[in-house]
Length: 230
Image (cartoon, rainbow, N blue to C red; front, side, top):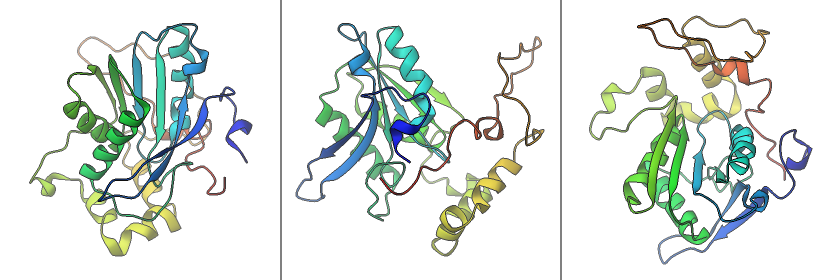
């Protein structure tokens, strides 16, 4: 399967970008979806979309279409080690991912205004980018994410702490579907496996919140983990 075989991906969106290394780092190759070719003129700004688990840049395909229609460039990245980006087996901490995302946007010559759009732990990475680029930042959009707190590792949910253990990590997140199944099981009011994707958002009652669709609703439309072969 190639990216062009997937529904919702326009020709010209998919591209690979190699960011040169420094004295301390090696070059890395990113895969991004970029709708700049669909814009009829100068962009009003850029939406920098950063995914989390268990997905990749395909998550943002409808955002690329809508953004182009509104005059916004959308750059949706595959985080390194995921999707069609380079897989080098390197352990990357939060600061590493923030720095590497910044090196990518510098290489692209990304100018403002920029609105970051982050999902899951990609939201934390996008917030890190935002704090380092206040001169470019125009806004922040966060979905199903959290805010990083230094020195508060004990507040991380036990499931996430366990999944991060070196002995457990590969087995739980790559060799099996344990992490995905456990994460979906944490959802309040689990949905039926074959429930239809809602066509409109529910209207919240006064004084109540609106539940967002869980991953079980979107997993049939969005391939969670793309093929490892290019």
